[in-house]
Length: 357
Image (cartoon, rainbow, N blue to C red; front, side, top):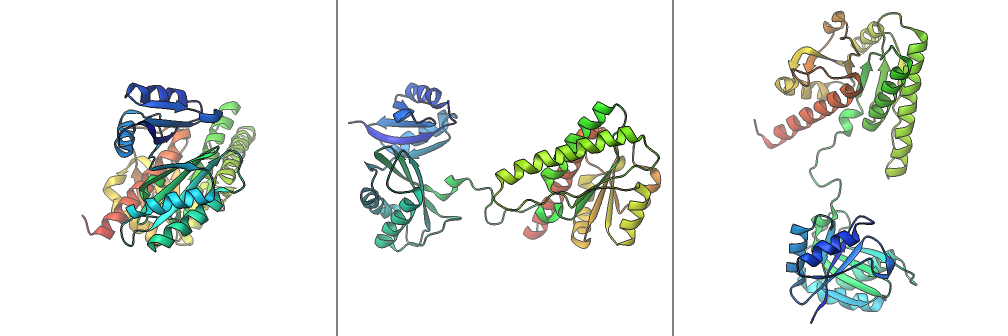
């Protein structure tokens, strides 16, 4: 006898496509039950785990694929009884979390379900709750008057962070990009400014300094700076909506290249010049990592249309080339260079931590 055996989620609008591919595998698939998009409920007579495994392997449109171990009425008592039975699958001392998605109108919230179900599981097992990195996750998927219960390994949560995962924030918070302005056609200058402003804010740098080294046309510089401000603000608005943490706005300043480098050197800051004449970044990974460890701030100097003035090279701790054989365009250089530096420094730190060479 067929029963609900897999609960799958999709991008909105792709549930019918996913259901069609699932049906080709020999399963009955109902998409958008009760008109709710992004859901496919699969029915089968066999093992829910095997059905979920097959769908995971064959249907990329199905994003979260959960074997259904129980289908009950969508009320707290029924859910409690279901998770108590399923709790026998927990090993001794395994931590767990409950994740509920409620679709429809009910007299309780998803949080109410999480709290009640968690208490019911602990009542019969005594296992610890771990909301951040659980060993197992109980899923309660509610659709109207029905609740589908599943249990999976904790890695199904796909968190952005996990224990031991390195963070680039400590590096970026001490990185100041010293960018020569892109000048010329006003529309082009503004467009490049927008892209650089977005990139700088994306990385949440310690600062971006626009640094001409000779007299420049006021109108061209104004167009570039306007674009820079626009790009920064547009990205900052998105970050503030998307991030749970506080976002750091990137300070933008204008300073003569030579004066800025002189001041940075006087403060004992690190200075990196990027150039096709420099050493490949991978060859100086250790030096780069040490520079970031030792210095309060690191200034990364980037050219624009023309190279960084040769006199600045003498003040650099390192002169690096992140893409040997290529000349990076101004609108991509900042992103490529900062990404390469982060990758090299974090990789070097991980190797040092593990004792590898």
